[in-house]
Amino acid sequence: MGRTAFGAHDAAFEAAKERLNTLKEEPDNNVKLQIYALFKQATKGPCNTPKPGAFDFVGRAKWQAWSGLGDISQDEAQKQYIDIINGLAGEESPAETEQAGEEASSYKEIKVTKENKVCSILLNRPAKKNAITWLMYNEIVQALDDASKDDSVTVAVITGAGDYYCSGNDLGNFMNIDPKDMPKMARDGKELLRRFVTAFIDFPKPLIGAVNGPAVGVSVTVLGLFDAVYATDKATFHTPFTELGQSAEGCSSYVFPKLMGNTKANEMLLFNKKLTAHEACERGLVTEVLPHDSFQKEVQTRVEYVAQLPPQSVREGKKLVRDQEREDLHKANEKECEVLEGRWLSEECVRAIMSFFTKKARL
Ligand SMILES: CCCCC/C=C/CC(=O)SCCNC(=O)CCNC(=O)[C@H](O)C(C)(C)COP(=O)(O)OP(=O)(O)OC[C@H]1O[C@@H](n2cnc3c(N)ncnc32)[C@H](O)[C@@H]1OP(=O)(O)O
Image (tube, rainbow, N blue to C red; front, side, top):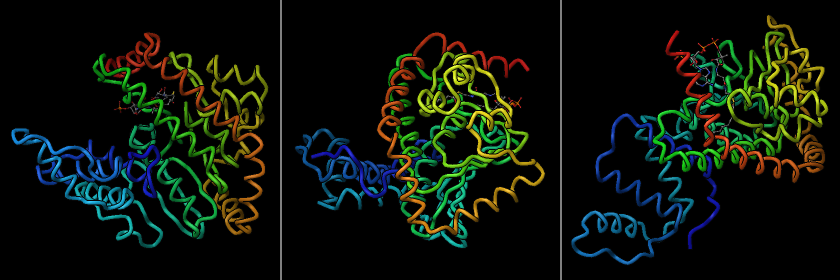
């Protein structure tokens, strides 16, 4: 019987799937067969299909590779799958490279460091203002999943590399797609966004946003799911969803009206008002605005304080608060993702994204 939920390496497995598509060199046929077999074993369990006929050479080779794995567990197959792909990507496995709190080598578009009980997740595409690609969504989910399970971590922090915190969804995620593949792209996008936002709703430890510069789109909305948000006075907060023919996500249709009231939430989510850091603070989206020049140091002091608090007490406290609205947050996430799936297929959205790249090309 196939499983609907994956095992212990879920997020790393999803990231490895993405990474397979970005390999510069195609693996040789034997390795491809091995990857195929491990994928089948990881997602469906031991081979249970009839052996293909003698003239179906490809089908037989695949069948032999899969059935050759015998009954190794789905978790073990996931692990081997991840190891092979990380190996092909020219990387050692995270367990081998982890030293001095560094886990950077297992990630391509974020950088994760663990030090003094703090897991720092750096959005690391400064040349693209840290726009979030499909790979990066997966990597963030993986990093949050790792941080939640790692007993040496008591608090997680997300920040951006360079002058931006994040410019939101990478609009290239929706480009160069054959029209006939659009429905699949929208379905996959919906599923990925749902998993991404779920990772924030259910993150069990304190999660702190260190907004080092302008923030756009989904990077703004999920801040409503953080436990504290510190912003430099140079940060801005912009959710231009309707300009892009899209709609609210990140549970913002639920959280923003609660934080700031309907009309102020509408100003952001429907009418695209860009807030300054101080305005975002007045509206409850930001905990505290800090001077840009001493931002890192000031945030560090606050994070270090949280990191040394009794971790179980903090976790229980967070759970009490989150449980008050956890179900509603999951419902809001489901609904928002469903609506967005339809939006991504709309002419309004396709035109807006084309227009962003056309304007860029003209400059
Ligand atoms: C799984 C899917 C889930 C989807 C979830 C949905 C989320 C919704 C959103 O997040 S909506 C928000 C989307 N983001 C935007 O609309 C921002 C678009 N970018 C801009 O408007 C501007 O780039 C800017 C205001 C962020 C920065 O402007 P500036 O002039 O300072 O810099 P550049 O425009 O020259 O940017 C530098 C390079 O970065 C590229 N880039 C920036 N943001 C994005 C982006 N979101 N997507 C793709 N690329 C982006 C930009 O194209 C430049 O690249 P280049 O140097 O190669 O030209």
